[in-house]
View 1 (cartoon, rainbow, N blue to C red):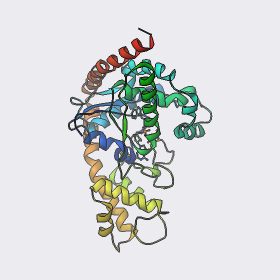
View 2: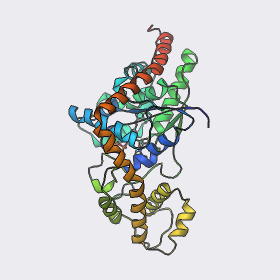
View 3: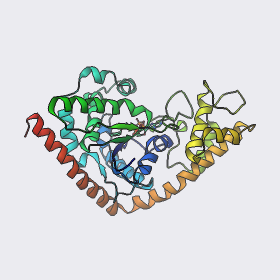
View 4: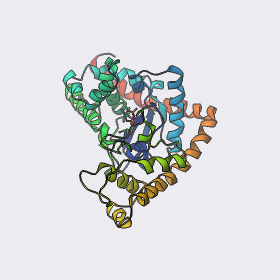
Length: 328
Ligand code: ATP
Ligand code: LTN
């Protein structure tokens, strides 16, 4: 793949989990080579559920520090906070007027989140995927690295782009999702039928990127598996499959290699090995994170610079769109 435009975002709705890393953030880093990448902290998306304003501000900044700690080079790839680039809100409105209620009604995340936040089913939660489509289309992204759960939203962005291009003439690049084959959907450690999620009320269900090594080991030791007693990747064994997939993602080994390595071993051995592989990857991320977060002035300079560079690209798209639809 050569010199594509890459865009992705993550909500500052909590500390990222191992799932966010395996499903998305790891690819953010890998795709930096030879491509033009834009990465954003999607704080406007986070407003779709109630937030404490001071916490939201703080978490947005610490998410930016974490993204740097994961190996994103903000000099190469503009790193910014979504609301610092006003074009996101502007494009979202135009796209809202080019998206059908019926399309949004099919979004499974809306259904899940409405069930979780039954006391606050706001219009933003419903139009959330349109704001996300805007994030992507503003930068004329070719490729969007995300986990499996966001595939439907990227497909909606494609449909909106195609429809807009047909109606108003070529305006947007039609983006594609980029989802890891292993690790696109990391499952909860306590309920492996559910995806691992940073906003899960039970902290034992996820590995936070900032968990201590001892906590990580404890969480994996307690991870729900089954009583088959054999280490194998098989249908109907979500807990076992999840541990094996995490191990492959962390070590870069194939599933075959992993299964050979643990042939005849017990669950305890596998769980310890998975925990160790995760600790090895996470430890340097934690060290960099605390260093970056402590130099607050520098961090603020980085995101300001990122927003300025992002806005230059974003404004070109908004200008073209406003002209096409008759707003300019
Ligand atoms: P929340 O719990 O607040 O909804 P989340 O953990 O689902 O958050 P997001 O900020 O919505 O995380 O997603 C950031 C990125 O991580 C997205 O690309 C998303 O697809 C990916 N991701 C989220 N959960 C998983 C998972 N269980 N497995 C793989 N990737 C995931
Ligand atoms: N909705 C995404 C976060 C997100 C995003 C984006 C991902 C916001 N804007 C643009 C990719 C591209 C989520 O993970 N929940």
